[in-house]
Image 1: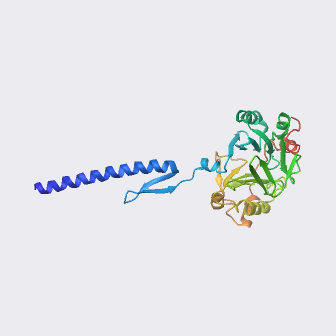
Image 2: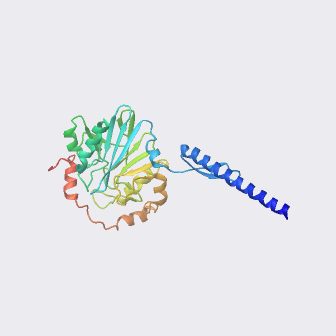
Image 3: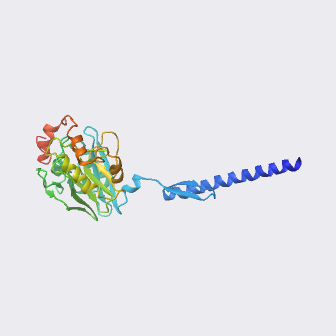
Length: 295
């Protein structure tokens, strides 16, 4: 009987030691994994398993020397994007909004950035751009928009053009369909794409006004955006549900409109029956003249 109890106690001590070893190994695995951005697990041999997890914040700064900031305007749910070269401090602003001009200028001043170009991804219908007024505050600033937008600007962009700021650049891809003047701006390393109203997160821009064409939009997205790397981050001009970023791979797989074939997509877009943007009557005329109409 004593020998049986002795063996039981010995087995309990072995089990306790095993649990302590396991806990120690898990703790060590967590410390190592945290530094490498991995989520640890434990195998039967107590060696940490490493499973990569997506961290958008780290991908945002993948381009060496690139500063990036995503900003938001509440009324029109518009995203404005600030990109800058950390070495030279030269910067680009994408889709700035009139109501947030003071915020944007203050941020530029606080960070010591030299804004070279303010670019609109198209002639917006739901808000007025701040590029015209911003040019009055920053005399060296240049405005930019698609050559096919019908709007005025200092720089007219076409397919393949590069917007350079310091050691960084954005490449223009024409993604017409929402309007004739829609462009997508792609970072030099293809890690980020600023898609304007062409491709949204789990959606896309409407095609029922301003030269809209569902077939053209479908082809633009599939040929100009979905051909980027799957891990390329998608930053749209708007989101109405609090989402901030997606990826090419996600949209190719989960976008409820763009996973359909062309015929189905056109049918969906032709039957959205959306109300016109509230500010369309004042926004479009103003944005055709760089946002300085009747200000």
